[in-house]
Amino acid sequence: MGVSGMRAPIYLVAGLILALPILRTSPVNAAEAGFSSYGLGGSAFGAGVTPPPGTYVTFVSGFYEGKIGGPLTLGGVTLNVGSKVEFFQAAVNGLYVPDRKVLGGHLGLSVTVPVGHIDLNASVTGPLGNTFHDETAGWGLGDITTRMQLGWQQGDFAHLAYVQAVAPSGRYAVGFQPDIGLNRPGIDIGWAFTWTEKTSKLQFNGAAGVTFNFTNNATDYDSGTDFHFEWAVGYEICKGLIVGPAGYDYRQLTSDSGSGARLGPFEGSVDAIGGGLTYTTLIGSTPLILSARHYQEFNVERRWEGNNTIFSGTVRF
Picture (cartoon, one colour):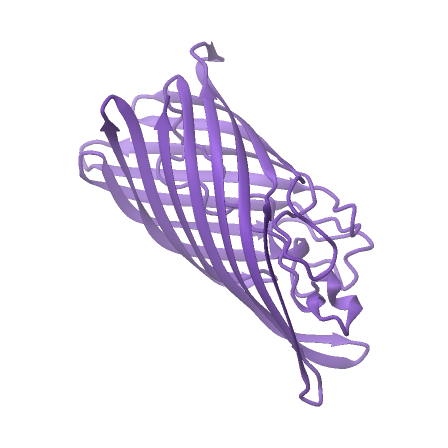
């Protein structure tokens, strides 16, 4: 079902070095801090399915570990900057699907509330070989997401259209802080599908969307508009258990801007591939859906590069 994915927090890189204030703008990243307000990896098996009418609660946990680094030239001086991050996030999602159809499809309304913990290390090495280090860690509330979707089912093909909004409600402060939120509103619109081929027991899934990121008023940084595509191909090994490869692609469509983008109109991109599984069963008469997936990122430009692991469980009330 269309449950919002894990969303990464503000990850400041070289800007975390106290001796170099200008670097606080996270210069080696595109889309301020290197992340969109949309959580990559959130759609996989059953991406285009809107469940039957009812109330659903999903518990999600995820772990991201990544790094970024490279040369940076300021005022004719070349520095080597780098950072590593470990980020854990847990979220609860509530989805309500009313009985009444709209435009021939089922309406879904949901809200996701996340909390997270970040552990961030940063370093910068000067031309003479001197290296400065800094580290921060902490817990906090993440950015709350609301979503509306409308889904249809035609035989073995299910698809949905959605719009979701991100509120800058998460923990945030300018500078080298353990930020969990991005401090910028965002709107994401997209379409997802699921096609189940019953004879071969294969399931094909895809989800495409465009994210409009708005200004971070604390830094006057305008992150560019970005495109994301997620996919998964599953095989039903036995009743209720589907396994298979999955991945995602992200491309920034427009450059960053604003007075906070001091070092240029950057654009970011990343690909990822991995795999996962989903298992649907009953506990008494209560439906239960369990899922897990892992992604390894590659082909990265102006973003973090790492691995992303997500677990979720959904129950119907």
